[in-house]
Image 1 (cartoon, chains in turn yellow, purple):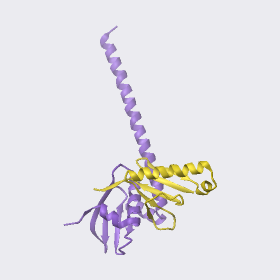
Image 2 (cartoon, rainbow over the protein chains, first blue to last red):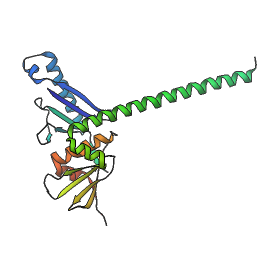
Image 3 (cartoon, rainbow over the protein chains, first blue to last red):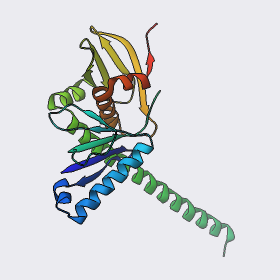
Image 4 (cartoon, one colour):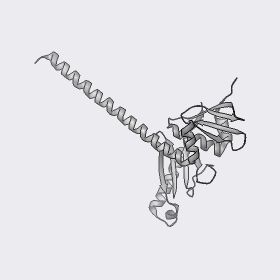
Length: 81
Length: 133
């Protein structure tokens, strides 16, 4: 299972997907991955930064959507104050 | 019918409706703010260890060791504010970096933690650095 969490004024918006089901051709699972990827690209275009965050592993910056990631967190655009 | 009385009644109705609308808007805003904070806190708990979370709640800040400099710690406040750069126990500088849009305080702690741990160099390039005179 994968999860995309987009930090926003609402706390965080979440999209879940199941890569195993998508690999077996489940149309709903494939659609969920496409939707997560679309949101990922949209937020990145707005200046968000993406991180792969998985238990027991170092945090890693992501430049491209990875459906194999267990959790991706998108941080909105930041600026020096 | 007394016209003056009618005007007062109408004004009273308008005032009551306005107050009701204002109350509803305030309540809606509060509920959204409260839900956002609850979700942000849930995310924060999931990215911190139990010990880190306890420390944050007890002391009001989170210490994040610099990945590239073992003698350096970033002190991230629980509420929005400057991030301290601590070297050998002393605050050497303060960093200011914030999201363009409002997000709950807990999400800001998450933001600093992820950026420092995953890409410290970019974090330092983006932050505005304030050094004591």
